[in-house]
Image (cartoon, rainbow, N blue to C red):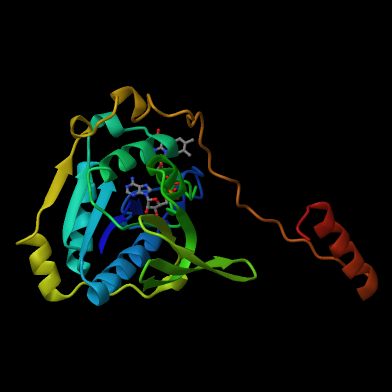
Length: 260
Ligand SMILES: Cc1cc2nc3c(=O)[nH]c(=O)nc-3n(C[C@H](O)[C@H](O)[C@H](O)COP(=O)(O)OP(=O)(O)OC[C@H]3O[C@@H](n4cnc5c(N)ncnc54)[C@H](O)[C@@H]3O)c2cc1C
């Protein structure tokens, strides 16, 4: 079973703070990590390979420093790693990101394309489903369990109030959520291999069968025109009077703000 895992290098948003004076995001010193859901996808891919044989290939699109994320994926146990890196990919929205990644995926033999549900920086959860559309393969999102069956996969897809059991043929794209597993730590041997024996291969726009106008900023139907930091200052309010009135006031206020 050949599994392609898409990993994105993201800033650890748990470490991003808002400067109380300038009200802007403080990005300095914020470590880059593998997007958490992608680690769940990678862990599951490695487990499936351990059980059923095959190969796990990790693919990322990003600047040259995204290689670090791929080395970490190799240290966890991935067999091969590819980095899509090229100025032509820069400024991509989710559509152009999915275009570049799916054009790269077409170069591989695969049974499963495994993504995270969502990246903690862009937060759109669109890239996985868009890739499945571009590749014209079925997709199952929010995957919390995967089992291999003779003729395909049996997967559980989490819903707000339960789950769906879905049988699906391969090739298929799955997006992982954290309930799927607990990702392993890289072993010492894994780290040595990742920085010694194994290599991270590079894919540029010229390697893909696609017009460069369909990539990066040029190929993006959407543009971020402005970004701002939300005002997170809070003012407390105490409701006084008798308990019944105070509770009614609180409920009215919450209703008005569409909180309840
Ligand atoms: C309107 C808009 C405009 C944008 N403009 C720019 C811009 O000008 N410059 C810029 O740098 N970014 C830009 N971005 C951000 C960029 O599009 C996203 O970072 C990227 O498309 C991934 O989307 P996401 O982070 O929401 O990932 P999600 O869709 O939440 O990610 C889901 C999964 O897809 C996979 N995945 C996503 N991205 C990658 C990747 N790069 N490599 C490998 N796997 C991946 C991962 O498995 C991930 O868990 C823009 C985003 C939007 C919405």
